[in-house]
Image (tube, rainbow, N blue to C red; front, side):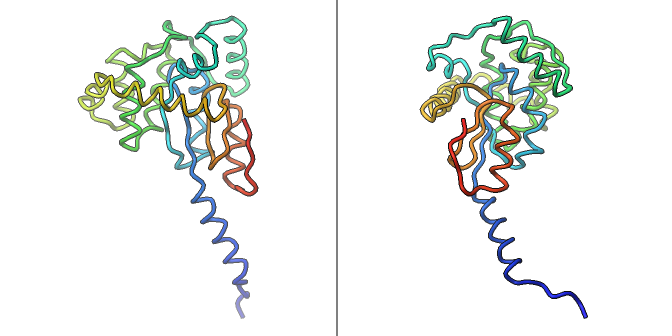
Length: 214
């Protein structure tokens, strides 16, 4: 005689699956941010299906009254974190300046459902190779890795309207209490900093009760 299946257990498992499916998850990033690079390697594994949303680090820091800077202590912190994760780190010459062209291309990639692949490729080119992401040839490499047509990506680079959308995403994060990027929103809960990815993933697996967790 076969084992008896508990219908209550099946229903409970199904309810849990549906609850997780309803918890909307978004990953907010800026390609000029080394934290985005450190997180991009793990987002798809920890938060599969998360929406990738470009958000301007420059706009976020301006809203916080923190100008973009390149303090040695900040670099040291990132370098220590990269070492702890076993990840190579090369500082691009442009850092910490914004990469508007690359972010427009990233916005296009997100619209096409290829945001994760594009962000991973582009952040590796920037912080593993030290390449300038606003260089069309470098963007071509990221586009190819993400399976995007180069002509479409280059067209998106010239679309300055996307800048306002990227700044608006940062403004929404700021209003929600964000103080840095990358950030992850799981339902109504916001986690700031790449080191919070594991916590965000844990909440996504068990979304009740939700709590504010910046």
